[in-house]
Every structure is written in C-alpha cells, then in structure tokens.
Image (cartoon, rainbow, N blue to C red; front, side, top):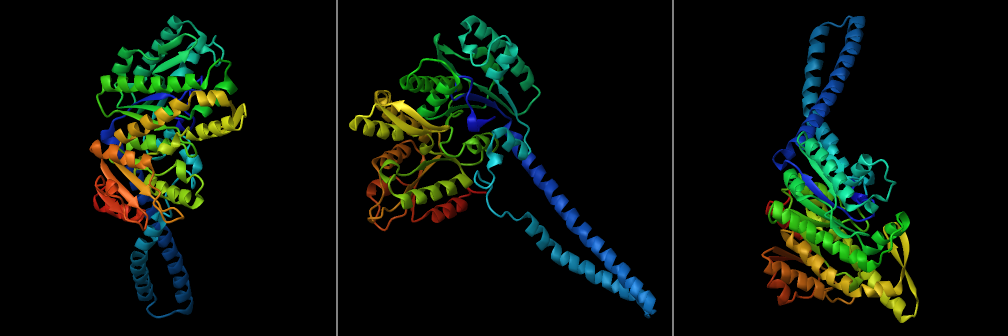
Length: 456
C-alpha cells in the first residue's frame, strides 16, 4: 500500500479496507530472525574451522620438515586449544554481528518507508494490495486516465462491482489484504457512495482506515492533474463526509474500535503507523500532545518537541496532531487579508501553492472546527495520551489551552494520561489531577513504560 502517496485518480486521500489474520503475524518475523541467527552461527564457525584447518596444515608441514618428536601430539594439543578459543570468542562475535546500531527510521533508511507493502515484505509478511481505481481502469480500457468519474453512475457501479468480485475471489487465497478505495465521492454527480455494502460485508475487513491530507495539498494535486471546478470549502466538506461514512461503515460491519483516522504525514509518511496497526497489534496506541501554535517562533522548543516525538515513534503506534495542521494556512490567510494581498503562498506536500486569500478566509471556521474535532477523534482511538510540556526561554511552562483540553478529554474518556513536565516550575493541579503520572523528562517516561511492560 503506497501510503506515502495514497491518493486516487482525483487526488483524494483514500479509505482502506484491511483484512489480516493477526493471530499469526509474529511468526514471519521470528522465522526471519531464526534464519538470520542460523546463518550468522554457520558463517562464524565455518570461517573459524577453515582457519583451524589452514593453521594445522602449516604446522604439520613445519613439524614434519624438521622431524620434531611428538608432532602428532603437538597437533592435537593445538587443535584442542583452538577449539576452546573458538567457543570462547564466538558468542561475542555473534552478538557483535547482530547488534542493532540504531533504530531503522525514515531518516536512516528512507527508501524502506516508501510503502506499507514493502515494510510488510521485509518483515516476512505476505501482503496483497488491491487498488480499486486502477482495477476499474483496467476493466474499462476505453476510459481515458483521470476521467472515470465522468462516467454515468450506473456504469461506475457496474465496474466497481465487477472489480470487487475479483478482489473477493483473490482475498480467499491470501492472508493479508489491503483494499485501497473510497467511501464516498464528491464529483459532478454530487455526493455518492463508492462501495456496495454487501461486498464490503463479505470482505469482512479487520481495519478501516481513512488517510487525511492538508487541504492545500489536495487542492494542489487537483489543479495539477485534473480539470474540475472546486473550492477549498468543497475539499473540507468532502473530507468530513469521507471520514463519517467510513466510520459508520466500520461500526456497522465490525463494531467499535476498528476504524482509524490517520494523517498522511506532513514531513514523514505515516506508513509505519499503518504497518504497526496491521502487524503489531500489541503496541500501545498513543496520542502525542504538545504545544504548537504559540511556540512556532521558538526553535529550541521546537527541536525539543521533535526529539520527544521521535522517541515516542520508536516504541508506539503514534497519532500526531501536527501531521494535518491547516492552522498554518489560516494564519497566512489572515495576515494576507490584513495587508490587503489578494493571494497567499503556502507550502504544500508537492511544493509551494498560491491560494486566494478570500478562499482561505472562507474556510477559517472549518479549519478551527476540524482541528478541534480531529484531535479529539485521535485521542478517542488511542489507548493513552503522552503530553510534553517544555520550558520556554523565559522559564515559563509552554502549556497551551489546547494541551489542557486534550488532557481533560483523555481523562474523561478513561484513557491513561501521562505528562512529561520538562520545566522547573511546579505543574498546575489541572495537570496533576488528570494525569496518571508526571515525569521530569522523556527518558523517565520511557523507563516507566518499560517497567509496565509496554515496551518489548
């Protein structure tokens, strides 16, 4: 599943139906580890045995040439000493060969994080990905690329049903399957469903995931790849429709707890998050809470937040509110309006994009409302919240109202609440009374989670 760029023909972020047999997921990785261990041991002992043979041949030639008395006994003693030495040093050699020199991350091994499919394969899991849109084009070769949604609804439905029948047949022979599709479309036909309930029910997915991207990035791809009239408001509304439809579908077919809303990732693709949801269900699901808007001009604080996030990502399935954050375009639009500029340039996933100031301000209310709802939704799908409260250069805690509301929402929702209070000032009772535990630094939190058995 190319989750790093998981968008369909109209550049909408896709919902995915994922079916996987979680009961046997750990077998693949253990088998790979076992094979690697056997190969390492065979290599070490093979090389040492070859070295022993070479030494004995040399010694034997030397002793026979000089007619040394007791040459055979000397050879036996040397061989015995070498075997003892081999057994003494081999464990340290194996440990050194297998030692992890650092976590495999998007920075250390960027190509590995291209797709969920690649991650699964390298971990020993077989994963089949079906892209409904691409399969529909293969079923209808007469339709030009990018124009399949212009077909009559009846033909679209027929094509989709034919493709999903093929997917159902293939899924019977495969253990782990991802179906990349939509729940809804908002196109010239208006709003319409992109699935048939009987087929989705027959597929019986374990997970339903909706991937989100920032509105400016979706807009940029629509302009680049399609000729379709749209506004930023259209994208904001459609995104909510897609989320709601997918969640309702998941709750009807599987019940509560099988739907996840995941951001595409502003800087680093969230492929690892999806992989862990599928193949590592034992990992705790964590919502990362930290100040955002009022520390944007504090580089040292931002660097501390990034270190905190990277540490958490090493150990947990993390939901990061910063992966989708349209507050940036809101502030840019507000500034442009105050300065009387008709357009504003903002960064998108594929580079800079120019937006009309009026269009940005039209969705100001949607941006604020969706940030509020989206962050709470990610808390609801988590098992615990870990919040970082860093210290500002003036010595005051960087405790925002947003962080306080997130802590309160998690507490009232029965979640485990943890706070890293990295400040010299005493924490507020509004923090301590809702927190399961307060730590002085991230290292203390990690050690506590290890003692609780949350880290393997």
